[in-house]
Image 1 (cartoon, helix red, strand yellow):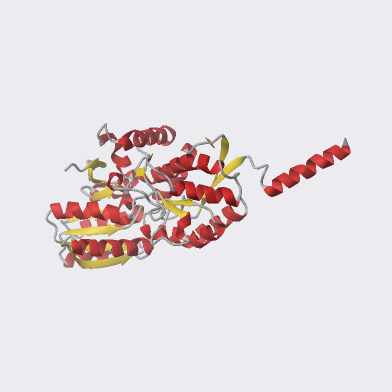
Image 2: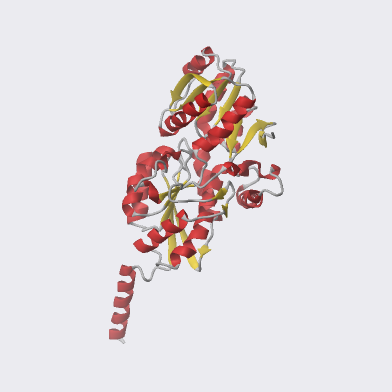
Length: 384
């Protein structure tokens, strides 16, 4: 009996060492549940509880780590998830700087990343590093097209720009400026601010002195409220536009009356109840809202959580294809999963209908955004 027991333990050790005994698929999630980006990160973290517990007859294990809204912590987290937990895929992080900071590690480990950040710089231009990255938020140019169409229809001919002094704000300016020029709209002032700045009064005064017909704010979460409040306090009367980085009810809660009338192009999930019955996104979006609010309370849902939910839907479609080729925990499985994600077609999410390709790891079209405004303390659909 002792010899048989030793043989059994030896076999188990060998199986564990080769990964054959692994009975679950491990997904690492990095979300900013503390510090400046919590309005975005907490809904992403909360949504993990709504992701599938089993896919393709395989148990799913989600390992969630907080990066405290910082690139350095995001790097520490991703290294831990890759080296210690040996995850099969990653979801997150919350901010663009953090996402850019982890790209090298993701590519080196050849592990798929479904990122939930706004900037298209994490997937464009496509190269050997970014081929491991997929994105479940709308690209900046898709959002900018809708914003500029609204500005043009309103007769706006000049705009002031203020954005984060980091990759999120800079990439937005890089995208928005030439598109505005092509639309015949001049950028008459361009300002920056840090996510942790307590005041942007100086920038607001410079914007107002330039006399723009509208101001466009390229920021996310709670910090995006500050420029808008400052502009209102200093008497600015023009239109104010935000990016989809504020597509949350918390933005309205924090800004109060100062953000009434804000215009934004964002994912249709935020106004799911107003979508026409024939819209295929409507059912998925309303299902997510119902599930989230049942768990966390009425009015608590957020477009940012839906980005994590959509990542789960993409994995739900891709994982069975990868399982047909390799076992979880192996390099072959991760490669097969990457290939399956790249081949995602007509995957209906809470924000869009994904159609990925080797050169497009976002896969969204105009169905992924609608114009909306803050009216009566809530986001409402802007109808043509």
